[in-house]
Length: 232
Image 1 (tube, rainbow, N blue to C red):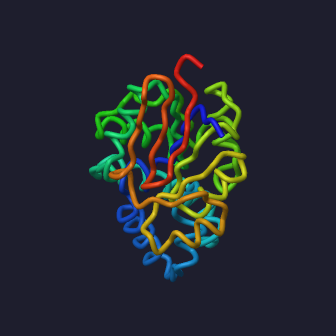
Image 2 (image 1 turned 90 degrees about the vertical axis):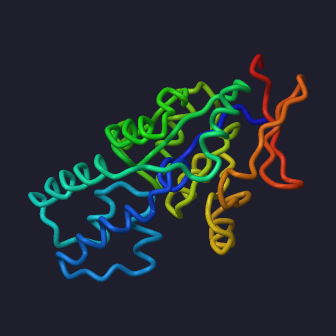
């Protein structure tokens, strides 16, 4: 397969936010007397839109209270510091230098995407951005990745998706793209069972190679993916 673009999730892939996401929902759970199970975290919180989390884990939250949750989340996420996942920024800059088209597809709102890009110093690095505001159905539905591929002018099957969450991997696989999981090694069997082609811990060992005629993405020793040239 010759690939033509790379599509990224944001939280847990570009920026390390699992601990901050966990803290917010734990506070809301304590307020409502909710016990969040390990399955809830993996299936209904990490990597999915806020409304999905509220419906699945906090059904007692009324429509009126929902806006309060959104307001609290926005105030919280606009004040916390964002840090990159190891190697993410260097990798993104290497892709840019080699002319490989990229997009970010996130379950976060536009304001959060903008704030993360600003703090990490990578505003404008993606060719296409797809926040949750741009789609009707969030992950695990593939709509965000399909829209990103469309905006890039690429067929989904010619794209690589980097995802860390279970709903995100489901979305990437359902889009027809080749999905690469970004998670600690103990999660690799679960993500591969969902259809991920390979799993990496982070981007610190990922490299872009070019010999002038072809470009390849080296994920690990012996694991390499080929890309069309920028001119192609």
